[in-house]
Amino acid sequence: MKKDDILLLQTAGFVSNKFGGILLSGDAKLLYDAILKLIKAKFRNFYRQSIYAPNLINNEILKKAKYDVHFPHNMLNVFSHKKSSVELSIPPAACFHIFGELENKKITKENSGYLVLSSCGRFENNNIVYPFRLVCFSMLEIVLFRQSNKMDKLYKEILDHAVNFLDELE
Image (cartoon, rainbow, N blue to C red; front, side, top):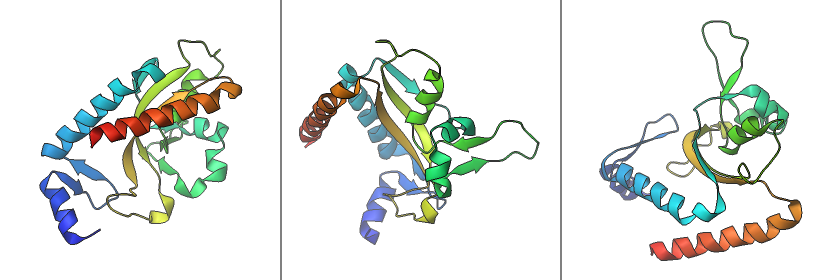
């Protein structure tokens, strides 16, 4: 990214904290809040519950999803100075919180669609490319549970909706 572009972002309140994250203030924070509100409203037909997830996740959830097997190099584990029986990580994606909530529960119409906002983190071999690839970031995901034969149609519907949403922003 060019130095002038970085300066423009910083002037708007979008500043790297030098540890792979972003600090938002001023206009950047106002824009973030406005876009989040707009996305929630525009995609409301696709989810039934909106969730703001915690900053940490139990490693058991990631192990059950085999995230630790496929992406062990991306995990950001949290350690305490005191011994604990619970191992925690910064979640690599927002959706993992839902998997933990729904474990051993029947999927019904009421719990079949979520909009999940979470602070997330991935080490990704320290491959930080400010402001596009960061260690710490916010993630907003639509998490849906449907019969597999209905997912392709729903995926296309959401993708078309997203394209129309972005066209409206122009």
